[in-house]
Length: 489
Image 1 (tube, helix red, strand yellow):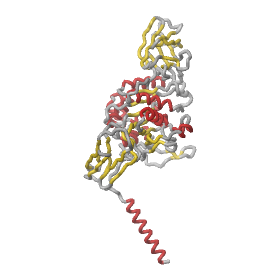
Image 2 (cartoon, rainbow, N blue to C red; image 1 turned 180 degrees about the vertical axis):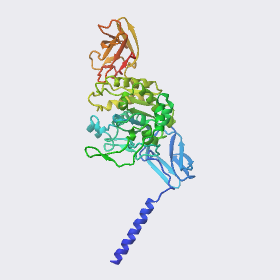
Image 3 (cartoon, rainbow, N blue to C red; image 1 turned 45 degrees about the vertical axis):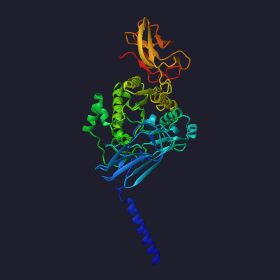
């Protein structure tokens, strides 16, 4: 019995020592943020930026093949190196050495895209159309997935609790459907590895995703940052409360709706990891912004470009699909469409139109395959040199000819067409009385001629100007025309 107790005491002491050692701060260890890991994808043809923490004054060396670069950790223990650009090819190893050595294996070099927004970007493959078949076919060893957890932060976070995964039927179900279908299309057309970083949160505004420098760069929205600085959210130190159904809900303000908080918690940990560009699907929560949403997009895009310091990297976004938001706001969505279209004036941007693949009764339309493909068309044409039609018709100009109005478009592709072969619909015209009536619309070369029997002197045209519009104008390539109006009444 005494021997048993003595052995037990020895075992307990050994366990205690082991726990003490495991819990002791390992300040000497070189550490990397989780965006660097096994199975990650590095952006080809751009300098490779690697950063992390170590002891102040510690020398850290990063090597990839024959390329090597060293840095000394500063007073806060932060260090950062930059290595020469890499070409796509065989997997590489990344070694990070200081007082310890970290080796990252199965690292690919290809194209990396950040995928962000609210619930339509967050919708998973298993929640979208044809889930069973798509998941079963999702074995793509050269597509890698990184999903950022939903964590707002008052201050810029250095890291996030995530890691890279190879795209498989096991990893893809919970990943963003739009991001996956976008990446799959790029992989099929380019034949290079694709890295997809999903950082999205359902129901969120655009303001939380915007960094301070973005607000500072756009006069129309600078006050958002000023107001935040004057009135930061107060987080009460209370336990979660229970709602009427007995479910625990967080106490205090919804921090995910606070300006800059999602940038801090869900974007900043990725910066300045080299990327090719970003795709964005958001706007439902900002529906009532109207024209101001264009300014908010400027702040978001300019802000991201500023913090990444990669120049005007491509930023492609999705125009919202039709949906019955409410009988009292029938034009709120068309005004959002107009604001999103106006954002095309921002350099190196593109817009995927979804007016033909929505569901007026479902704010989360299930067809995410076409959304991903349409975003990929912009990238393939603008960034990868593919000679393809990448956009549907966008309003260009109008001219009055007696009782008719001739409307011209950009991006007519191989020609204008009705995607269902039926007469064109959802066109209206108005005279000086500003009363819009249904109009007849006919294709005439690269233009549409619009008229109405009771409007002898038309002055304005609208197309698809309703939240539940289902127009059929497209180009021969099948890409739909965006809603528009020629008036500003």
